[in-house]
Length: 451
Ligand code: ADP
Image (cartoon, rainbow, N blue to C red; front, side, top):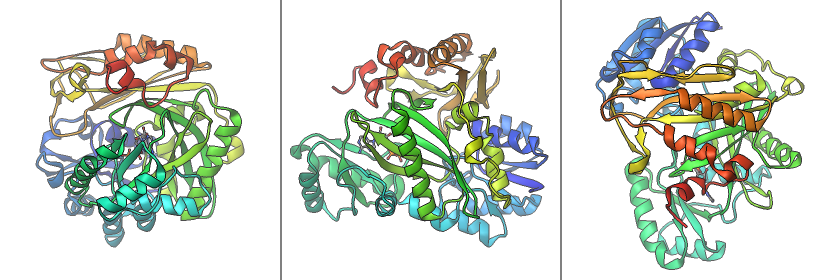
């Protein structure tokens, strides 16, 4: 096992990884920007190295500074968390060139799956169902129009290099295509530096169901069951639960099998997630694979008892896969709510500022992953995720009631700071959510957006 790991991230996931390392007797190095001098990760890590100013480009995305911090401190491996450099194949290569273990799949796998249109082609070749029309990227509006006509409206335009729910446009009718195409292409170039776009059928209603996987470099792979992440605002997840509710056992098993087949086809190693959309007839379609730890991994940890970050560290150190499929016996139901520093009444606009009060919930079967504390000043530069509240119960109904109790207890206050807590409680109270029969349209229905 490694003796020292550098965490190339911030916020709750940096804290999460530091905890896993300490449990395994691994020393930790937190790298941070000047905006995070007083962060929880800096306090909890064994060592901290300030690598740059607040702008991510100059700090958390600054590969050279991160590698230099690893060299200075003698770290042997880099855990990239999620976001920032987690799915950057160039960074994975730079780590390898500097004798640092990148905790994630091989750079070629990161590169292949990070290109969403290439990932679709690879998965289709491996026999996985994909949304109608998913194909090559389109060169120009003419090809986009031809593809959309062939697929049939509504369609969704997506960026090949996309992620984080950004740069997607749903197009309901041919007249909207030209405008949406121009906007998506501009966004693709501006946000991802890659203007390639592809077109697929917009599935509506659809549920987002994903499979958590672990695989080693010796041919062994297991799945840790499913999560439903259909509660989304602007294509970004807000509430996740596992196992995915209201789907037949046969469908869930088929989705898990497909994910394993896909992972094997590309030689996937480490922890990863294969994402699918499921339609009303329970037909499922692969949409993308994520080569990293996911925000919602605690859901799976609570139902399987597997510590996914421990497993990532073991796998990256070359230890053969430890959990065997027959030992993975999911129990009960877990739900995660993302407490974001956002104003739900103003289009989920991020809020920043000092937390005068920060009292997270506790109590039975309640886990909170957070980097917040009373007196913490939320910087305005980064992701708005402040805390993840996760509850477990033998049955779904009680897991939801427990979540509502936990969110009721959660006290967060500071000048100008708003959180998603009240909105999350509305979701928990929604009749369709309670029944487990909801789709990706749930949040729009509650906020009055969309149809
Ligand atoms: P990102 O990589 O940006 O997260 P995804 O491809 O994972 O993008 O899609 C994010 C979400 O957008 C999905 O969970 C779903 O809600 C919606 N979405 C994406 N593709 C489709 C589609 N073909 N039909 C319907 N909804 C879609």
